[in-house]
Length: 293
Image (cartoon, rainbow, N blue to C red):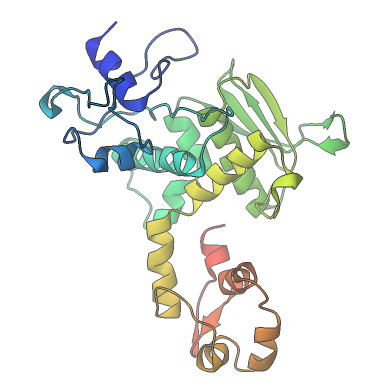
């Protein structure tokens, strides 16, 4: 076994890291970091990274580790319950976004999109990962233990193909495609998988089983990169963190500012209102929901 892979597995605390479904090894991309640093553990999402049985730190010298420039998203180890932590899912989404950025000239040979959001098209990401993406008039119906539903999306790992139904509204179609992209990256055990229509509106864990919730989370992280979302939020609402008071209520809805506070029982309520807002402080704009749909 390549010594680099062996060292990488010690860092990730995962004896199966970089092993692909065909029994071969995927490319290793480990950032050059200073051994013994708390930044390593924070970066890897593992508080015990590099710690050996003697309470000391293992690892190679930074110069012996390959650069992180790879066109494959590195594997993330699941926790003991067999699930991904949300920060792991977010890291996978970020890694894929970096791959798309590095391959932008290849993916858009005639010029990259002016709007960065267009670069987050799940169909483009699937293409970058070697999967075909098709829109199909209908994918038929499927029955599970609870109900029969119109199939919205299908992942066929053997054929390296993802299909999405044209019957879905555009915003639902995009989120469903990103959800299937999440399955491709996170759930190697799913060889053939069918999904219900999705638009990201599920609000409780009980509404979705854990595997589906992980794919939902991936879709949200991928379609709405935190840095880009914060930048556009600041441009629209002139702040980093929105505080609801008399002044901001009026700026948000001058025609009915008093009732606005009555509709905001929770932070989630306020977040939804801000996401759909089409104006603030006398300026009109495309809502965040429409920008990132």
